[in-house]
Amino acid sequence: MSEVAELKLEGQTVELPVVVGTENEKGIDISNLRAKTGYITLDNGYMNTGACTSAITFIDGEKGILRYRGIPIEVLAERSSFLETAYLLIDGKLPTQPELDNFTNRVRRHTMIHEDIKRFYDGFPRDAHPMAILASVVSSLSTFYQHENNRTEAELFSLNTVRLLAKLPTIAACAYKKSIGQPLMYPQNHMSYCENFLHMMFSTPAEHYEVDPVMIETLNLLLILHADHEQNCSTSTVRMVSSSKASLFAAITAGICALWGPRHGGANEEVIDMLTQMRNEGGSVSKYVEMAKDKNTKFKLMGFGHRVYKNFDPRAKILKAACDKLLAKMKISDPLLDLAKELEEAALKDPYFIERKLYPNVDFYSGIIYKAMGIPTVAFTVMFALGRLPGWIAHAKEYLNEPGNKINRPRQIYIGPALADYVSVDKRK
Ligand code: ACO
View 1: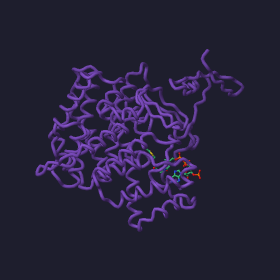
View 2 (view 1 turned 180 degrees about the vertical axis):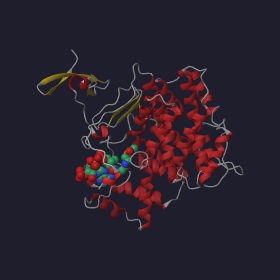
View 3 (view 1 turned 90 degrees about the horizontal axis):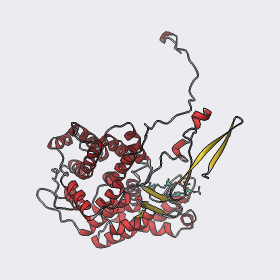
View 4 (view 1 turned 90 degrees about the vertical axis):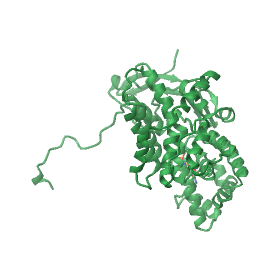
């Protein structure tokens, strides 16, 4: 017999079914609680609340496990490409060779943005944050693809998936070019996904940028590692917006906005800010390590520790090796990167960090890698968005295909004033 939980309330015992996941994760199904008892549950920050069942990504933070559709991240990092991983997340299985070729070709053919969109970039201030531009331009895609009633919902979702995957790198690179006053570069469809993005970022009409294969390999890896992380803030936002049946463009725009915040996608930027401050103050690593250990300072070493991974973050382990390889290959000399290596070594042998299992996290290494690639710090979160896009799309699709799905509408416990009088303005104090 399947397990049930018993809840005692006002002398009544309510039985609540227990839902068991593939990896034996257990949840108490409270969907009938209010109907049976009049009570709701309260869970600030959703620390204990499962918002859905999902078949996309599995994480075990204690054991340092991350799998997409059952496949370990280490295997995908070694053997897959970003577009293949996107297919896996969105369609639920690895593509056959013809399926992959067809998907890759479809994405290739949608990389250009409408010529009128290019004019939007002239309207943004020169110093506009690239995440604001990304959100605005993605939102505007809805206006270019609004008369498509002759397609089924599934066909339209598939087409918009391809459009988003193809156009997001172009939109992001245009935002960067605008910020440095260079002409926007057209995509080159004979190039691979990652090579094309680096070309649009760093080529100019006057000079073609020869992309180093190690950069392409590292970018492919970074995008795979960021592609999904189950019900994080931006992904939950995408599911929430999708639940109102708004368009996929609207849902992804909302995801980009949620990712922008420093508590979510912004941490890798803070790693570089911290290293810059460290360098400006004379470059004393030990001073910062001591500050991080001193409970009176409230200072934390940016890029260390993780809420879910209490052993190690499997993505950080993979990125550390990629980071070492990239820095060695590119022979980059940057005092900030030297400081990062020094800090990593100091923290990894310090008992405070060892006892608390505080390892460098994915943001520590991704920040260093983006810096080494020449990506401006302000655009780091944009890179995160490029990687996370397939995860957002996969979750929107999973939600929309769920039989009997409902609009997501949490409840609350009201703690404001009880019934109050409307006092006319001349009598108010
Ligand atoms: N530097 C110094 N001490 C730290 C750090 C750090 N980066 N992280 C945690 N600690 C200490 C805490 O002070 C606490 O010490 P105590 O037991 O003596 O009180 C102990 O380690 C446990 O830490 P918690 O705060 O309980 O861990 P929590 O899970 O709440 O926080 C978090 C995780 C938010 C990521 C935290 O480690 C942190 O702020 N790190 C720096 C910011 C960062 O890199 N964020 C990116 C995370 S990765 C990602 O989002 C993709």
